[in-house]
Amino acid sequence: MVLSLLLSGCASMAPIGGAILGGGVGSFGGPVGGAAGAGLGAAAGSIWAGDRELKQTKEELKALTSGDVAKMIELQAGKEQSGFDAVVDGIYRVLWLLGIFGLLWVFVPIIYTRFLHKKIKANGNSA
Image 1: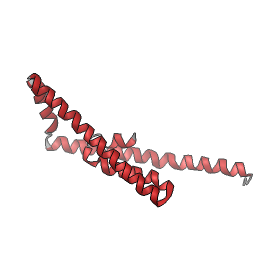
Image 2: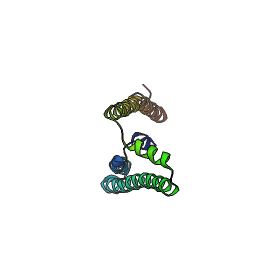
Image 3: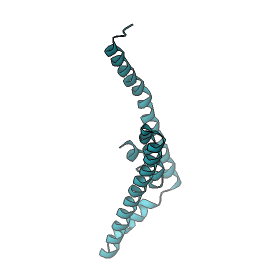
Image 4: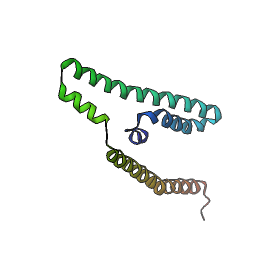
C-alpha cells in the first residue's frame, strides 16, 4: 500500500520499487527467498505500470472514437506539465516521503521496544 502511494505519479519506478519491497520481504527466507521475492516484486511492479498505461490508452481511444474533443484536450493537458508544476509535484513527493519516513523513525522503535518488553516479561527476566 505504501509503495502504491509513493509511486502513484511515477509508473517507471514501479518495477524497481517492487523489486526492493519483494527482496526485503523475501529476505526472511534467506538468500534464495530474497532473490525470488525481488524477482516477483519486479514482475508485480511491471504489471502495475503496464496496467496504468493500458487504462490511459483506453481513455484516449474512447475519446478518439467518440469524437470527444474536450476529453482529448484534457488528456493531453494532463501529460504536459510546465517546469514549475513539475518542481512543485517533486517537492510534494519529497515531503510525503519525509513524512512517511519520519513516522517510521518514531513508531518502529516504539513497537520494537514493546516487543522486547513482552519477550523479556514472558521469560521472567525482569530488571
